[in-house]
Image (cartoon, rainbow, N blue to C red; front, side, top):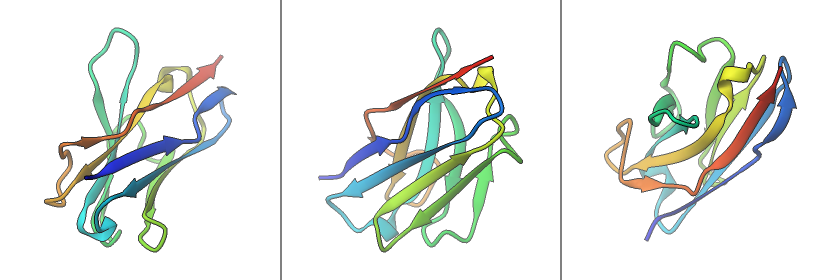
Length: 119
């Protein structure tokens, strides 16, 4: 059974940085495409970033391109989201997602971690 546990959220001021981490347990990490999504209050969950199984290909939402970086360490079963130049509109609960088919959205979700950016 796959379990995803996120960490690293918090309260920061606009312009600051945070790094989120998500650890996958229960299966072979390298076989999963990994992604980050977020959900702001009153809004639908939206795609943020994806990294391919071996980490060679990354994809970003236009709203975070150039500010966020997704990466993975297959030896540590961990995917990261480095968030720089944070804006108040980045405030949301951030969720980690794993897809055994390597795609952009699978059936496995973490519990979420809150990111709050004050102006």
